Image (cartoon, rainbow over all chains, first blue to last red; front, side, top):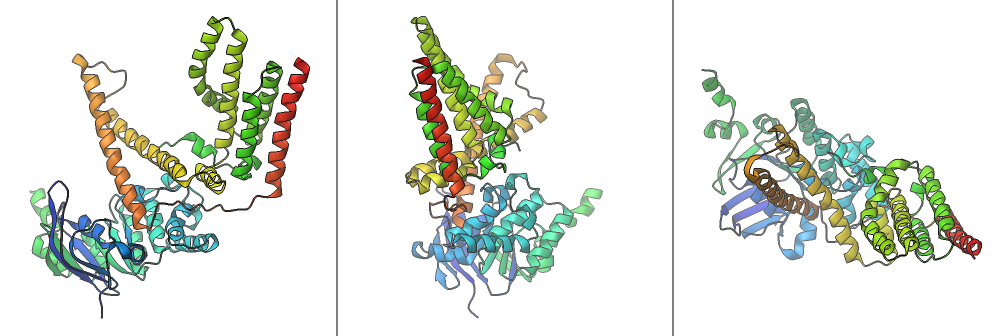
Length: 238
Length: 244
């Protein structure tokens, strides 16, 4: 089975000299949902930005067998959809419907098809009633759903969610988990939320110092790296 | 988060809102030319044009005083030139200058407050205005919100630590604080703009905004443009004839 995402020996250094990625190897297979853990500054988001060519480092990055190179960028961005951590960065059109249709129009869909697909994507995330509203008037949970709709509408083969539960209350996190579970794409979820990852992901990778330091089940990595706030809870109570 | 009130008004549903942006732009152009080139019968012309604009504001269900106040933003600039004319012994020219600029601003505001900016830019693009110029306007508009948002967040955070614009601070500390805040605002806005751009690229943006509204011009749009233009030009002719 050929992987949807294949990364080999990926290295990247920011212009200020900071080495963010130091040889990342990673695979995402069809149907998989994989969690990406790691401390702040370990290179998780930098890694994600390489998957659709927003950053370009040394090494091999292939999406559905296509190398991430300038000539393939439009095709790559159709195949891999990234939902960014801060929904406000993603939602910039005047209305929700226009925002969801933005990617579709960029893909070359004509107006009627773009609108009907955008409406269908809003229905998938349960936000069809928000279509004429301005995105900045939505709650954090609603913005996240609209941001996901904007990506789902483009029908990518891989969905990347960067910190999807950040700033969301627990019931909204649960409904988001329910929504994400039912999306058919293979998924890569960058998160610090262990419960969210445990509910959704079959596999996890742990970033540290710009490399994938370990790989295994969510429970396995959490216990190996003591990667759970509850591990500290008993100390705090003393 | 409080955005521009004009943006909110432009999302209304009146008959004027529903007109094609091109129809409104052409009518506005005729109105502005008729107003700017008038030399005789000026008080009558201004009175008639003001009534015409008020009719437009009422039809669009826009708040009259709010629109009058916003159109007044141009006055400080023209008042200066009006005072110079007055001092040079030509008060009529000074008054005419003030009235022309105020009515022009009100007319432009009426169009902007009844047309969402993306639709207006889309109409300009279909009318042959260079795409690059329109993109600059669209980005400027979007990033204006970004800077306002960042500024509002910083102001709230400073307010939470007891800061206020009227508060006295010793030894020029207030200026240092304001300077620092301005620098941080610039840096944060720059970063956020970068993130927005990345999010746009991730959804396949290739340097061209597509608009949702590619509707053909309807007969009601043509009727509006022709009627509004005839009224403006006819009133100008009537005012000149009366003055003659």
